[in-house]
Length: 602
Image 1: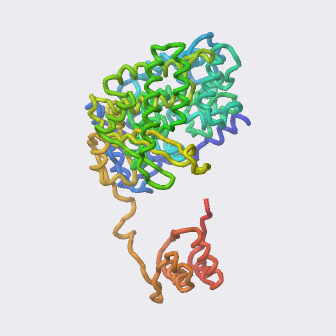
Image 2 (image 1 turned 45 degrees about the horizontal axis):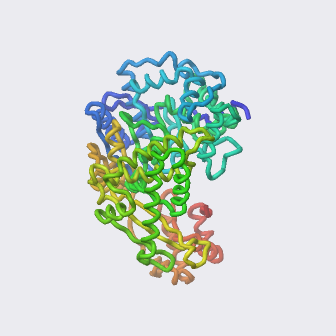
Image 3 (image 1 turned 120 degrees about the vertical axis):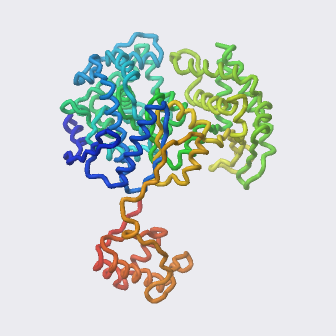
């Protein structure tokens, strides 16, 4: 594959004639003449960011119906505000930034032996991109970064599609997991890819074979297909993977390197909301703009980020590793070993008296002081937690930085330990003020592939966060501005109370259509011959119903201008009606009114 092949895939459509709209003294370039609702939306974005810059923090809830172009409006307004801030501060590009000087290739890495993983990554930044540390210092002082988060990677792709339409081609990055980005054929597709990757990096640090793709990661950021004619090219995950495969470089670390100097970073919700992932991805939200698109379920995301579910078998694995590690460093690992042993003993005691929910599922839960009492029986108390947390922090740091030959926790046990202490930290925070915001849960269920003996039950310990504000408020208080947007945020008052954040700006934008003249809503309960339109399972077989539905659609198609979008309860009913209408001639009559297209099963 050639470089121009990659570039061609990323090339946007011919640049449309833009419309420049001045809002709050800021010129906003829009790819076409915006609707009134889009102007109102962009006006609220600009007002929110101006207030945030003045007061230090200011947040917004912006609701705009699906199909009104809110993502495009949001991108254009927030990027215009960002550029205006930069021009007002008279900041100049760092002369040492290689991208600021037109990019180019840099020499291969030759790291010294014995450095840690974090040092290795820093070494890549300093050796492969000589001035990135100075650039980052300059960025931290001068640049406000936009973090644009959506629920899924596929939604990120859709937002980037809107980003391509804008005239704002700025430094960007798309963060993703190793599972999505890895280009190393030896570990790609494996379940434990994170652990394998870290092991290869540590081997590289000791001048073993390691990961060749990691060494070439710098070639991705500097690749000419991402910078055409001095302009930054909009790209998505697939584009970066193609570049990585072509230069035999790591797209995962390439994306992270690009995020270091990006004006806008796209990522999933969890990268922003979950403190563990945010730390692992080295995302700094302090003083930056956070956009959470399609944020109607953000409370669930925050609750999940503050919760932990861990199976008994994984706890046994963690217990065994801690027992072995006590020989190398008793001061750190012995308290953790005793804590996990206490949890396992508690599970063993409680699992025989759980409430029965079904034949294959038993569970009990404890809240508030009862949960605290149960944890105390498992050797976890508010008094001893700080010292346990200190041991856990040291154990996790050792596991992250250790050489392969050194004794340390392996991947999954280390992740579980970190998750446990993340949830316990919220649970015990502010002198136990938030104990009532959690439920301690122990549940057992029959393995799906097992019989019904006592050995076939799997137990799961959970600490469920019931208050999303515990997680969300901490993130929002650090950010310059958090903008939540979706087609359905109402009732907005519940968002403020549940997330524990004051949203100074709110907007319930109207649809771009004229609802009075372009929308009719109603229920049609009978067909043209007064046949009841009841498509329940029992009546759907009746030919009378099937024929009445067909003639009803035909009459609707006669009077409705443009197209008609028709939904059915199931593909089975759709096929049934299609067969009947083909036999009676109704299908041909429908096609006479409007060409009929049928969606296939996805």
